[in-house]
Image 1 (cartoon, rainbow, N blue to C red):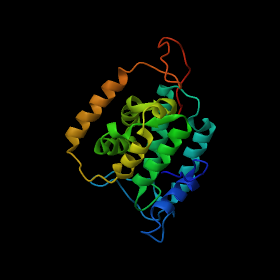
Image 2: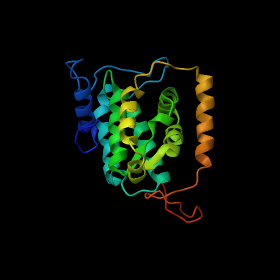
Image 3: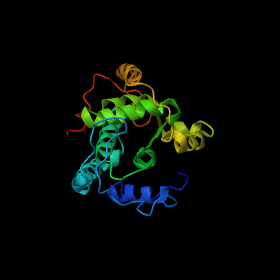
Image 4: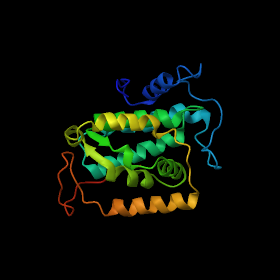
Length: 221
């Protein structure tokens, strides 16, 4: 968003984003849902309504403990970022417009942590597939799509007009209707995981670092 909605990257912050995006659509914008939901075309169930608030507090309090992912190298940032997004996907706090709200929320989180995600390089249907898998498996698919497409804010600033183009791309990213068959999506996600494994490590300034050095554990959960 050109003018980000300020908040603490918690459930109320996500609710404020949702309320803003749906203000001309629903009277219940920003309100936690009271009905069961599941990803379209699947039998996977999102978090039950009575547990949404508690689960939101658990996930976003952990995010706060991690300093909202600031000051991390690319590998650690991407892994922790993907975990939080996978958990938010599972919670699915609203009846509708969860995906769009989460893209805005997580894009803002990344930028304030010093990273810009090149959304133009990430197929929307593959990302949707990775987020569904995060509910039933793990967040590795989200990480595989995000990590190769991270730029530091300094790198993005040197690419003329990139931030504006990505803002425009993001506005339509989560509303694309094309969805390929699950086998095709699995193949694309497997290819993304393979590319992710081959990436050299880099720090928060975009510099490479020694892959043999111990940088401590990733997020425990």
